[in-house]
Length: 223
Image 1 (cartoon, rainbow, N blue to C red):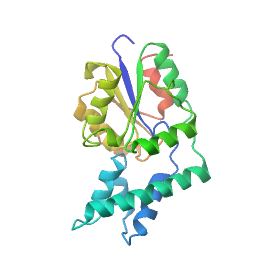
Image 2: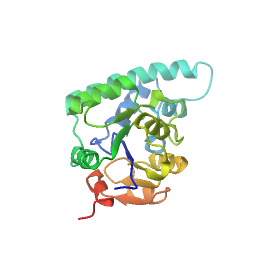
Image 3: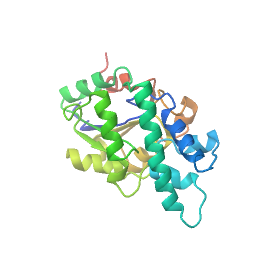
């Protein structure tokens, strides 16, 4: 693994099981304000910063940003309720993958379109403490979320990775892969455990499409 310094993983759908909690919470929150969205509209913003997603889904006009903040607060409440009632589970093999990489002196970071507070609740429910990964980057840590590359660059900055040529990006959405491409990472890996199917991921910039995060370490540690 001498050419690999850092692997950056998305959360929901990539390392955390996704059973539609996020789009369901979005739809419920928007419906409270009589805003209806189609499944196609929702699918198009999967992987983006949640606040940015709302600005795409809420009609433009006076008070759009104020309304977006109100809907976002409702979204967080709906999401917390869904996670509390249904539980939060890691994708099988995620924690083992983190451990294998770190045992081989590869740093591991998580990035997500969730805000810091929501991310903290999610990580606590998973039992992933400060020693599980080397860094966590959230949507409110940067000025612009995916497909902009800034969350990737922020993870590099926090972990001390100095070149994108030694960085891998892993996610379950086309926006994850577009962000990896925009960052110029050497490995840009899609996984099929989340929002987008193989056809969608293979239509985005990528180096690999794998069944799940459990296969990621094998790219550098073949059996």
